[in-house]
Length: 467
Image (cartoon, rainbow, N blue to C red; front, side):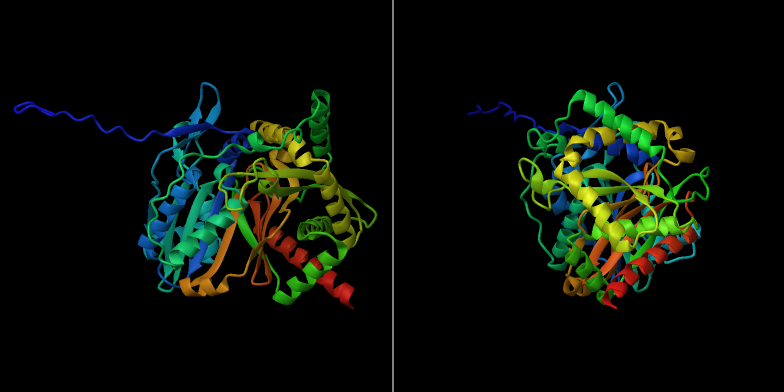
C-alpha cells in the first residue's frame, strides 16, 4: 500500500496488438491482380428510402468484429515482395456519403448514358484504392452511400478480393441486411485472428503433383493459350475499365431452364458457358464447319471440402478454378452444355481444382508481369468465367421492408481475366446475371449484343425441348 506523500504509479495501458498473417499463394495472386484491374469486389444496393447511416455503421462494425479479415489492412513488404494481412483489434470502417450534387457530378462525368445505379457501380468497381501496393497499408473494406434522387439511394461496399470471394460477399450482404433490418444492437463478441490461407487447409494429398508433371502442365496451359479463340477486340490499346451488362430471365424462363439442366444432370454453369461460346462463335459469322477453341474458367467454392471444413459464411478467399478448353462448331446448346459440363466434372474428380492451383496462380502472375504473352496484350486468359453454383435468394419480404429495389454483387475484370465474367443469382425464381467485361477492349454495343444473343439461345433452348 502506498505511503502518505508518495506518488502511486500505474502501469501504462498497452495497446492491443495487431496480428499478422502472411498471404497464401492465391491471396498473393489477387494482390498482384487488383492493381491492374481485376479483383475489386463490389456489393451494391439500390434503395427507395434513405439508408439508416447509424444502423449501417453499427452493422459494419459488428461484421468486422465477427470477421477479422474484414478489419484487416494489406501490407506489402518490398524487400521480400510478400503481402501480409495486418489485423487491428478493433473495427475501423467509416461510411463516406455523397449528397445529390456530388452523386450527379460522378454520374455525369462517366457519360455512358445508362442507369445511374449501374454507373455508380462501375465507378466503385474501377476505384484505384489498391492501385499502388507500395503506397502504404490499405484497408480491406470501404463503404459509401450516394443520393441519386429524392427517392433513390445507393449503398456500396468495396472489398479487396483476396479477403472476400463471392461466397463471402453473399454471406456479408445477407448478414448486413439482416442486422440493419432488425435494428440489431452492438455485440461485444469479437474474433481475434484471420483464419488460415486456403493452401494450408487443402486435405492431405489433394494438392500433390510430381515436379515433372507440374512443369508439363504449365507448359501445356501456356501453349494451349496460344490457340484460344477470343471474342473480337474493339480497342486493345486504350486504358481499360470494367463495365456491366445484365442478363435477366423471367421466372418461367428460369424454371424451364433449370428443369432442362436437372433432366440432363448438369448445372447451370454448363449452360451459361455453352451459351457464351455459341454466341461468341456466331458473332464472327464463320462457316458452319469451322471450329473455334474457347477457354472456360469455372470457379468452385472449396469451403465444404477443406480441412477443417469452413462454414458458408466464412470470410476470405476460398475459391479455386478449373480451366477447360472446348472446340466449338455447330452444336446445339444442350449438346455443348453437356460436353463442357462433363469436362468440368472430370477435372473436378481428378482434383485439378487443388493440384493445378499453384500452376494457374503462377501463370496468372506471369501474364500480369508480361501482358505481351497474351493476344494483343489483352490479358485475356479465357472467353468466359462462371461459378459452379448460382446464388439463390428468396428474401424479397425483407428487401421490401428496407426499401431495397435492386442489388448487384460482382468484381472488376479488366486486368487479367476473361472477356466476360458472369456472376449469376436466382432471385425470387428469376435468373439475374451481372456480366462484367473489359472496356474498351470490348465495346458496350458488342457485349450487349452478345448477352442478348446468349439470352435468346437460353430461351430457345428450353422452348425447343418443350415443343
